[in-house]
Length: 115
Image (cartoon, rainbow, N blue to C red):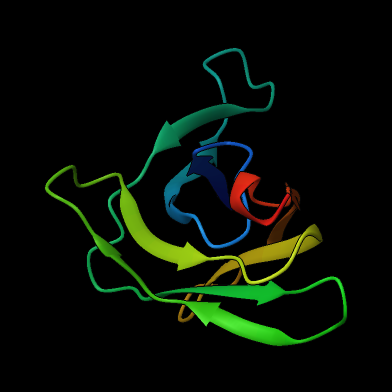
């Protein structure tokens, strides 16, 4: 089985200084009944910790602290982006070997107040 994570944010296109919610949904793969890959199933990571690394456009690194919600398949954290540009978020489980950490890029817009 392979562990993967779906990362999403609300709002999906944040502005500088705007609080965002970062949502993590872990999944595991399993073979389908016909033997082909893959059936992705939500997984409840009971005793695991998730690590979300953030890298700003100028290379500064930070972390987003996430915790489990009442939904056993959903983790959530908050973050405020300090500058516009392309930010990279990388999600990994601390105690579980991922095939590779899940990464995605967020485009952060200038705030309307700064315009």
